[in-house]
Image 1 (spheres, helix red, strand yellow):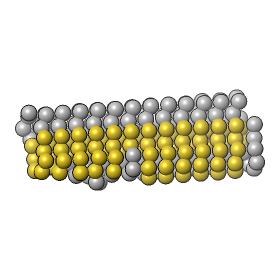
Image 2 (cartoon, one colour):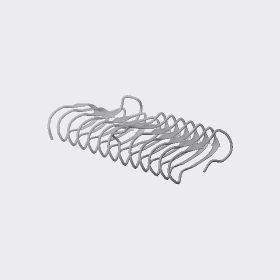
Image 3 (cartoon, helix red, strand yellow):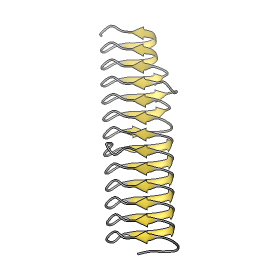
Image 4 (tube, one colour):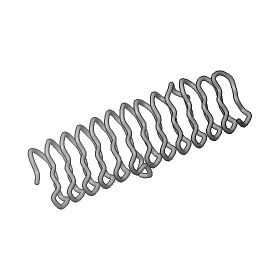
Length: 177
């Protein structure tokens, strides 16, 4: 079912509306300008958005979802094909981990990770929120402000926590416990 100009709906029970939209996935819906919904039961809306993962949803401007059951919104956000069940939002956020969530201008690359601000959460079950350079790379690690938490179960605020179960407020905590 096509509406308006230069729209293409080739998927079974798909729908394309707006301008230059494509709904090629079965049961998909594309709307806006230059959007593509190619995943099964996917939805792309806005301008230049792409929902290629099955059951995915993308909205905003130049957002891309390549993973199944994932969502991207905002401006230039991206959900990698390995990031099933993930969510990227804001401007320039990137999600690569399964069940991960990136917001603002951050990166959530670890499984079950969460990032915000301009931080990177790379460890499994990690949480990072802060300025660029804030990094939670250890398993179950937490990093705030400008900290680096690379040890397992470590917490860093404005320092480096590289030891297992270490806590760094300022400075370096490299020993375990």
